[in-house]
Length: 52
Image 1 (cartoon, helix red, strand yellow):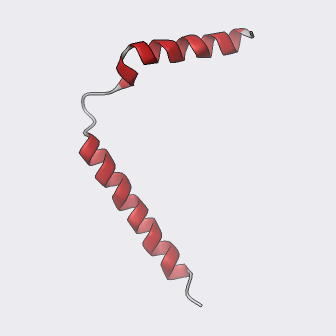
Image 2 (cartoon, rainbow, N blue to C red):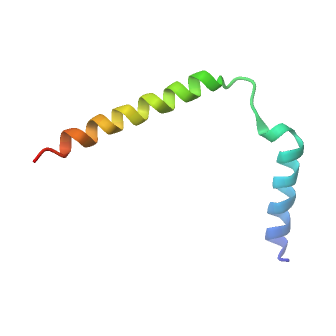
């Protein structure tokens, strides 16, 4: 195994052991509704350009 792959594998293992890297300042509701809002805006933009 290459040193780069071993280093990446070690980093992923550390991330998994430490609770998945969750940050306490990120609200799941804020993140989810923000992503939903962005997707709805993109959907609206795409439908405006898709007029025949």
